[in-house]
Length: 116
Length: 148
Ligand SMILES: Nc1ncnc2c1ncn2[C@@H]1O[C@H](COP(=O)(O)OP(=O)(O)OP(=O)(O)O)[C@@H](O)[C@H]1O
Ligand SMILES: [Mg+2]
Image 1 (cartoon, rainbow over the protein chains, first blue to last red):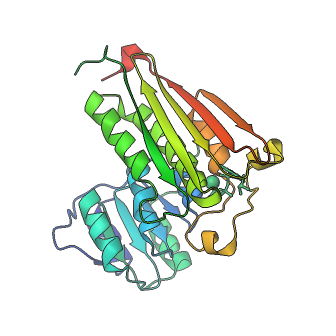
Image 2 (cartoon, each protein chain N blue to C red; image 1 turned 90 degrees about the vertical axis):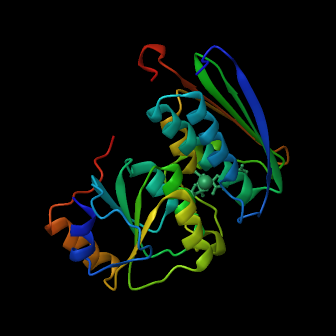
């Protein structure tokens, strides 16, 4: 799914004007547990989380995740934003809850990372 | 890229240092990328190393991460000066965690770290005893034919 469609579906805002909205996202993973991300997420997937911490960016980088969506309108601090920028990770903020955001993306055709 | 040269090195890990948590694994990832190791191996090595690094930062005062890379494999050893693990079989179970609340607030404590290290390495060994620290050894074999 194209990043632009994800932004529209989630009524999200991007935190960087240089975002590549044509980026293709393969799967999604929704959790606040970093080891779950590292265990289940595939590269090129999207992470939906309510956890707004630099830890999330570090984890995304290690797992080759290019896009992180923060739910319930939680804005990351400047440290988290600048870390993401340095690592080339796109950050989105959606006003929706983790449950609703996941439901919308699932209905729009985005699937959970398959277990390998 | 010269694949025949052996490279090794080490990083010192400081317990409780959450600001730099993950830096050693991130740097190792860059080293492997520069060497031209195939992405899928780099990803497995990075995930396994990051989980081991986080455990040192969360549960121990200090540790050392060593890496050894040659044509055949990536070898990672993470040794710490922490309290050790009483029941290794229990610690290895998915979902088992003693992480306190403040660690869970940072997104850790799923009890998936050790299982994740095992999942991503070809050889996984953990040695630990109460009062004697913990040593995790991991090997990822590189399939030469597939290396990009
Ligand atoms: N280096 C270590 N020193 C002392 N205890 C450890 C160490 N590594 C792991 N443990 C113990 O083993 C348990 C399980 O570790 P594991 O990494 O699998 O899960 P976790 O760290 O609790 O959560 P997660 O890794 O999913 O964030 C820990 O909660 C801790 O009690
Ligand atoms: Mg752990």
